[in-house]
Image (tube, rainbow, N blue to C red; front, side, top):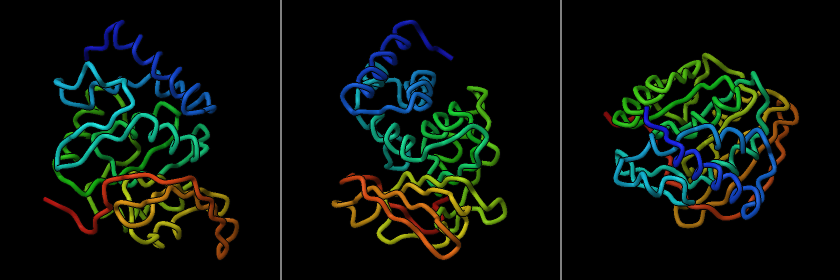
Length: 216
């Protein structure tokens, strides 16, 4: 796997940008972004721009999120080492790799077969191993492995997927963009008790839509 001094230098610059321009303060997140070679998750034609704060097209008409989005969602999650994290929308595997670098136990679901195959192969090549990686409907979560300490949804949902909240531990947090495609807002839900949820809002975002079922 090609990860040169140039790539490492650009990653260091990206971390400084996230720290000083975006305001990321979680050192665990910054360290993970510094560790994960983002250029390996995108097409080589974009490699020179991999450490700019930009989204790029990936398979299945999807995109790899801006590094700032990955950093902000990861920071809002407040991941601690050894926590069980459910990720809805594996995509190309970059966010998965960041969570693994944060020493989370990652359970991840992807509904696009092309992306599921790509991310599985890519993570294996990089010797990164989620606890469980599945091809399936993200809205359904992974009830077999529930409850989870944290849930991160990397695609926008028009309505709150209540099935996912059921799979969250009391005290657990879920970070998810909600709303219509052009005006999604990033939220964090904290499960205070089995019946009580606290909601916090973190501004407007634009994510690819969250889709039901799967695409072969």
